Amino acid sequence: MFLSVSQLGVRYPGATTSAVDGVTLGLKAGDIGVLIGPSGCGKTTLLRAVAGLERVSAGDIVIARETVSNAHTHVPAEQRRIGMVFQDYALFPHLDIGRNVGFGLHHLPPRQRSERVAEVLALVGLDGTESRYAHELSGGQQQRVALARALAPQPRLLLLDEPFSNLDVDLRERLAHEVRGILKAAGATALLVTHDQLEAFAVGDMIGVMRQGHLHQWDDAYALYHRPATRFVAEFIGHGVFAPAHIRMEPTGATVHTPLGALQDVGGCPLPSAYPDGQCDVLLRADDIVHDDSSPVKAQIVRKAFRGSEFLYTLRLATGETVLTHVPSHHDHAMGEWIGIRAEVDHVVTFAREAATDHPVRSV
Image (cartoon, rainbow, N blue to C red):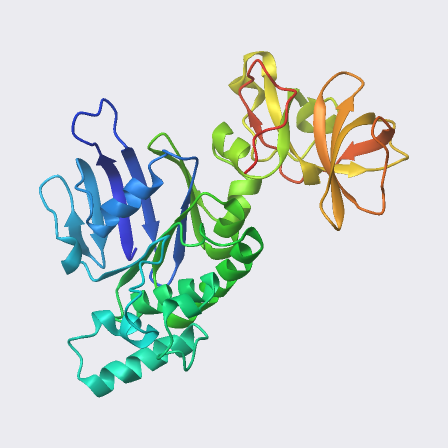
């Protein structure tokens, strides 16, 4: 692994708990990692520890086989060959774009410096803007200038802290895809922090979900959505609900009985013995529930959210449980209407039962 973080701990003086506690993750050269989680989960502290801006209290940080942080070693930030992109861009307003981008290239002769500045500006799609100033550019262009400045010295690792948070919502995801393309074109290894899962999905090869200083899962977006390792990851990523279920061993194998019928694809589920009497909660994503007028299972529309090409319906079953479903927007059903639904679950995911099981899981 190009970046290896092992059992990392960061504790601030006087704090009773660690801001980062026992975090382990790895990033291959040329890959992009993303840390996501609620405010205060420790993701920015972890990023700052990798940058050398925070000292670690336990564990190790290794970059390109060099140990840069542990309880006894702390390589200063300026010696780690790391580039940083901040959420406020931190561009110098009194310098033109060329001098902003070339700020970290004073070791190069003027001609080589100019060539490198032109090269990275072309990489981010801002050719010929060297003589302009930051206030003359849009927010998205300023972000790309900040990225060009960070890439210019050819750092061995690039760190980005909430790089899109100052942009309009409509621009964030588009720019996130652009930034991924730029980083891949540059062959950069990068670690990014965000609170927006759409940004994380757009940018990251690997995504880590954090909560209260702990890393719950470090995986690709598909696995986080379809194979969440913990109940928190299941709650934090995507739309869905937990419904009460019962796992039983039957002649055909383990079967999960739910309010929407029996589910058979349980290869990744614990055996019934993992739960008291096989009682558990099953995760039902919105895309696991299909609108089917011929289905014997009916549900009442209690909420609808128009998403352009589709509605996100919140439905209540006759037994009282709530589920979510995506339905093409030309199926414009009225509030209170009963519609047929069925479950099509490719990945059955179960967790230990909790008291409240009939409300939608949190989505950000």
